[in-house]
Amino acid sequence: MIEELKDILLKIINSGFEAYIVGGYVRDYILGKKTNDIDICTNALPKDLTTIFADENVKVSAYGSIKIVDNKYNIDITTYRKELKYTEGKPTEIEYIKDLETDIKRRDFTINALYMDKDGNIIDKVGGLEDLKNKVIKVIGNIEDKFSEDPLRILRALRLKITLGFSLDDDIIEYIHNNKERLALISTTRKKEEINKMLVSPNVVEGFKYLQDLQILEILGIKYQNLQYSDDINAMYAQLDIPEDFPLTKEEKDNIRQIKEILDYGKIDVGILFNYGLYLAMVAGDLLGLDKKKISEDYQALPLKNEQDLNINGDEILDILKIEPSKIVKDIEEHLILLILNGKLGNEKEILKQYINENKGLWL
Image (tube, rainbow, N blue to C red; front, side):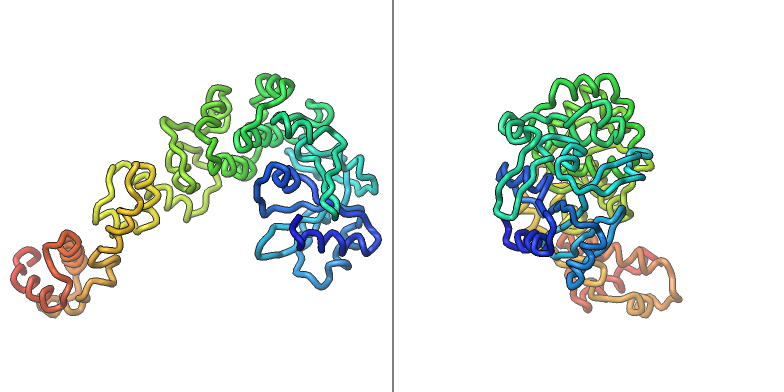
């Protein structure tokens, strides 16, 4: 166990409460995987936690859980609870409890209900260790109740199957076959969180084929023709057709659009490197099967990397041509940049001035 996490547990325990690490961290710890997302559960109430961690940088989130703001880890501390009411897949009424056993039973899958104490001992009340060993995903309790409460659990089960390379329990497979239309009830924001985790998994190609065969992608509004794994999330989205309302940021949309443009162009040349930059060229080049090292070397060898590197400015161009401000200046700059990038003109001021003087007829 990470020493910092043990210190957090001891801080709660030394204040007279129970505290355990639970969920994905414990699962991944057993599997030998690293994760920065840490969930801690305790019988301490939110008001107790805010007192215990008064000297920490904490944020109180929905339903009283607290988040410790840390540069290395995402740490959420939650009081034992049971959900009394769900609305649109989210718990809207909860009850704090003192009983660890009840807190365990409210969780979704057995492999996510393993608890770790301050000494690194694993507490398993639902057969999660056996299911980890057998690489199978099983629901805790009644599957109808669990998936009806929150349809996102259906998508989460599929995500765990893909990212972990596990199989689904027969009950889950049967439920999905009979109820997959319930996936349409999930908000686009919550869908995106799960899809993102699938897309960055090395198992995504095989996993998406599975989702396609189950007609899950159709319900999610996702289509694709060919899919090639990349460790860049924008590169993965660039290979998909997604719904218009999918909650991408402006930056994500811009990156995805530009990667698609490069893929449609089909190669990485000086124009692509200059106009799109190294990051987008590298990402698209990887999907095109091109040598990343060569792309990087070609970028470093560019005689100019942006418009500001052009060794002549608009005022100087206007002065040479003896004209008033005009859009012609932009055309000339683009013309000069193209010549320089292709090695047909040097980027020295006097050379550029001479070229413009000798070719005024191209623009006037």
